[in-house]
Length: 216
Image 1 (cartoon, rainbow, N blue to C red):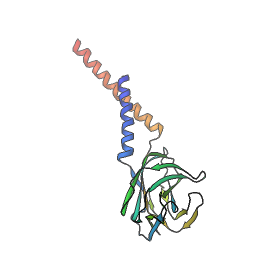
Image 2: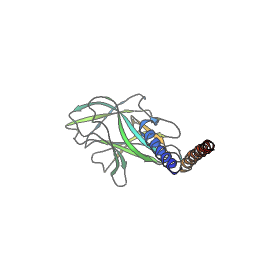
Image 3: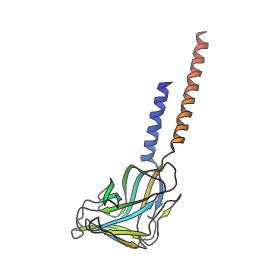
Image 4: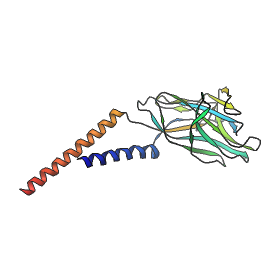
């Protein structure tokens, strides 16, 4: 019985971790909205925008942020996407992903970062080279992203030359999408574990009854 519970617990943990990486839902997307142009990105041209999470009580695991990018000009390098804490002017998380050479939609891994429900998160895009050496282009739209289940975002972006002082530009939204996985509430997980334990217990009892009949 004890061994069965351990196996159940490991299986549940593996299921949740694999779901966070392999599945998920696009809760907010502006990738299909009409494009107005592109914003230059470099170490002296930081761009920030935000998204607001939905109402899942357990929160969400951030699978990825997807960006619609234009062809880079010149020879930029060191493209970075970060979840950003504005009070401290520091990144909370740097997302893993490609250094884009061409145009298209590029995904940046959130490494299963936990997002609280009904909370606003800002993310920042920058590079290690200056715009004078070349720049990446982040496409933008006059139309806000489309969200489901109370997810929101867009309608504004911020720019900065150093990541400290920022200027606000309303009316346009850099094109992005957010892929996330809702986290089950602790009570729901407890019910799943309890249900599994009851099933294992019933199976053990059936096996014990079968062995007793065979012995007799």
